[in-house]
Amino acid sequence: MEKLLFNNFEIENDNVTYWDSYYAGTEISLEESSFCKFTKRFVSKNSLIIDIGCGSGRDSQSFAKSGFKVIGLDRSKEAIKKNLLSIKAIKEKFCLDIEFIQLDLKESVVIEELLKELFVDNNKKNIVIYLRFLLHSIDKNTEEELFSILSTHLPSGSLIAAEFRTIEDKGKSKIYDNHYRRFIKAEDLMNDLKSQYGFEELYFTKGTGLSVYKDEDPFLARIIARKL
Image (tube, rainbow, N blue to C red; front, side, top):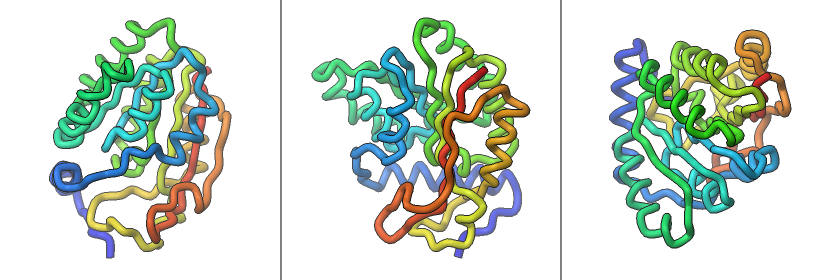
């Protein structure tokens, strides 16, 4: 049974504790996700990938090994610590252009200033905002603040690549079921990106079979959207 969270304070504290504990005590495969492999079809060579909610860093590293510049952002100090240790030995050996930064999306002013700086410093690169399994882990207000910042500051032609759990996934069994999740109406999110935030749809699908993990086959949506 999923844990019920009744207020934002409880959600915030649950998430911080859960994910720091998870990354501190779990060895995670660094094989790229199926969504990472899928997203590469849409990404041009001269791109900066900003992996928000990078977690274990497996997709960040995969993008970097494919020749992209990558910035991985995550709220969990333990995740960032592990990522920095993981890339220390291979960054120079394989000439990877990759960084990891600990950052809380709740600090909207900080995230806005960082993203503005990254966009200016990389104004000759194509920007890709990569959001795998992030959106369902944050509340609606944080999602809206993030998309508002991206809408305001992302250069035209930039991409958002998102994979997330949908409302259809709510009743399905889960291997990890003791932390906060928000189940999203995918069509509503796609419509908001188009009508409120100035994006056009390049790709949209939802269903199962997209990211199978052991005995769990979640109901997910995938969105690729381009800034107008």
